[in-house]
Image 1 (cartoon, helix red, strand yellow):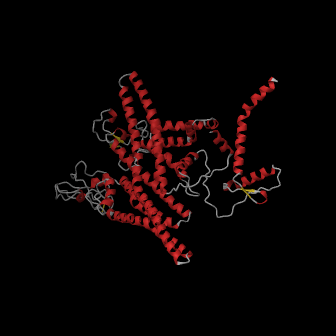
Image 2 (cartoon, one colour):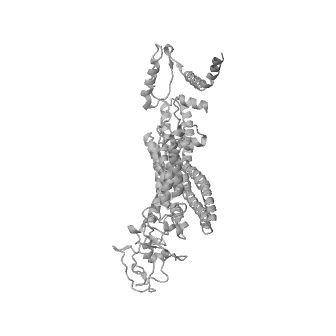
Image 3 (cartoon, one colour):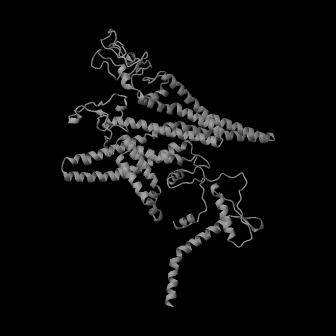
Amino acid sequence: TQAPRSRLCQMPPRHTERWTWIVVREKAVYHSLNMFKSDVSGMLRGEGWVVSESAAEVREAITRAHSSMDSNMPSHIEQVPKPWPTPPTHFTTNKFTYGYQEFVNTYGIPRYREANPALFTAATFPFLFGVMYGDIGHGLFLFCAGIYLLWNEKANDKAKLGEMAAGLHSGRYMIVMMGFFAVYAGFIYNDMFSLGLNLFGSRWVFDGQYNGEVEEGAVAVQTAEFGSAESVYPFGLDPMWHVTSNELLFFNSFKMKLSVIFGIVQMFAGTCLKGINAIYFKQKLDFLFEFLPMVAFASSLFVYMIVLIFMKWIINWNSRMLSATCLEPNGDGWGSEDYKECIDGQCGVWVQCAGQGNGLCTPWGYDCTDQSTTADMCPLNFGGSGDGCQPPNLITSLINIALQPGNVDEPMYYGQAGIQNILLLIAFASVPILLLAKPYFLSKQHQSTVHHHAHDDEEHGEADEDDDHGFGEILIHQAIETIEFVLGMVSNTASYLRLWALSLAHSELATVFWEKAMVSTLNINWFAAFIGYGIFAGVTLGVLLMMDVLECFLHALRLHWVEFQNKFFAADGVRFAPYSFKQIIDDSSA
């Protein structure tokens, strides 16, 4: 009797988990059946949503389940006649897109058939992270960590992971992409642990640099003619910028402009998605009186800002400034090849002046005097004090579009003041259209509908009161949306400057750690260098490879949730929750 008792005591522990699952499944089945309604002939009828691609599979499952039952009652699955309520939203994801879709779903579920932000987030999120975290060395560590997670993918799928480990596992492809774009941005910045890499040979050289005799304040010269293919570093920034005294000034200007460009492009893309949604859902008023005014406002001020940035980058300011410079004829600078301006169809031709001034001439033949201004000496005649020969301060130029209409102190092209006035008028005209047009036409539609169904004067009076109330609500809602968009374009553009700020912070922290922990100890002795390396490795791991990764991650997430998605994303959909025994068991065991 001992053996049967022993077996009887050992059986429950071995089967407890399986029995628990069976009980959970049975309870779930009966709970679902309780939501069915009685129909004719004792049948039960239930309504639910099925993914259209899986309709045939569902019918097959119903048929298979019915055939295994000893029942004369038939089982059917039929499509409910329209109109339907708004269906829930479902997206088929894979291992790569799952993490990005969960990002979007955490903010809000897309409406049924609305443009899914996750599609764009899969490309722009790791890219913007890389812009902020750009460093070849640090990005390579992150990339290798993602590759390690991919290598152990199957083992981690079967293992029971903790909350943090499960999160890292689900975002393994995202981590790989973040590391890849961090390395890519690092090559663009030419930055590896705060050091520049001379991979293709610098296009700048200091006098005496090969002998180690470069003096403080020396000016580097190009190894090839300005503007030629040989004068351009093949990929990324020239490493010489990392050893110059104006390194911070140059990188600040470059990264700030880059941040503004990326921000405006992403926000404008979000606005365009709003128009695509309006076209798909046949929302004519939204397209004509929301999307088009928004595009007009954004283009006239913010896209124009990008145009000015690129114009300032591509204009040969060496030549323009030289054309407004007084030189001694036949002196050392006379006849320089840097002068490229075209005067009367002749480009780069030096013309000697008549010598009626102070003896100095501009390259195009103007007689300089002691009272000559830049506008007098410049041959372009673009207006303003610079006349087109002086590079402008873009921030001042953009502010003056609104504060000083028609006044451009340092123009870059002919007629700039007039064009900016036209753009400003377009921006101002788009705001009242955005504010009033849609509420007006909605109220007209509502009035025509109500008056069509009205039968007597009393009903007319109640309808008019309802019309006023409805129009007021619509106008308030539209006013909020207008203010949010107009002010949001300004504040959101400024918000994208975090790309510049975090990239600057990352590079400066890496520089401080390298110089204080490594460079300062290398020349002492080997033991000091060993201790310095330990400090360098520790702070790099703790600050740059952990804290800064999280910081850049959160800021990139905020840019997508707030600056990008609010341009088009309603986030008020309902998530499709399919019936799943696996999910039920997982929830019960959690």
